[in-house]
Image (cartoon, rainbow, N blue to C red; front, top):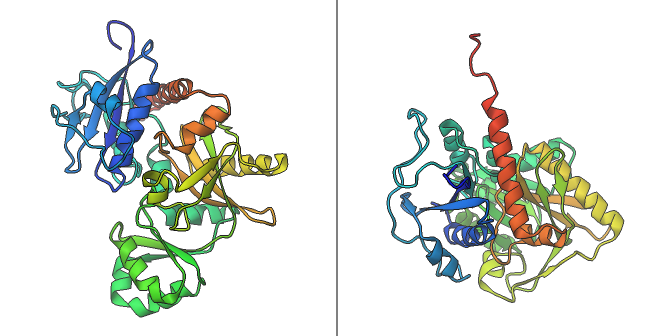
Length: 367
């Protein structure tokens, strides 16, 4: 800690993913929610070329909410923490007590940053390496949920090399799911690369579009149902928020990137969701079960479908949910009585507690 006793929190954002701009907006709101009496922020932006740069808090707070305008400003280079050094301090940033990663998508939400921080011995907010990797890969995630008896939509996963070798056979397999269906990259978020396909005529183009963002893609049967979301906060035990609902009003016909971030009228949030007490209880239990099965820690947003017959299906889990002004994770906790500053504080406390626990694990059989 600093001489003033404040915990130094490194907020890590930007990154090399299609969700770069959304990450910057999330970092802005995490910074705004940070309790200045307890924490000192250290801002580290990763630009699209992979450079780690210090960032100015005033500029970040003054930035707008439009992802088209969000950018990493020029700053001093940050040397990556080295496990071989005696200190995890960077000459540029000084010592950092805990990292709050708000890196959405690849190279941030997929276990890569988490692995770096584990090796460097720096505590961090959110899921560990395994939970992050599972949550990012929609194919692996859905297989684990399915094997645990948790209902998911029917899906098929395809790798690029197989599609390149036998495109006709692959398209026939995917079309067997029926239309409409959705194509999406296996490892992406914020609805990047997703298309709704209503007939076989548009399937090949949608598949090729998804492959622009990943070497593995999914095709999923469209589910007719309401989109229900819940927020999970780790701990012993983990807790689940009240449910919210996404009501899409965008021409895309689903909760697309444009509907989420670019069209202010693209979607409406129903907080709380207008569901029965029984439906909410079942949704909360299912969200918590998914959180546990997928090896998550710290935080996650769990997205469900509620069908007309009352059945619930898990759509996906997001291990670094958005913290933008329109993001459901902080909104759901605010709805449940946990204000943004208290939420961010709890997440940091959980990260520090886990760091202390992991430090007690034996790494040698020698006495």
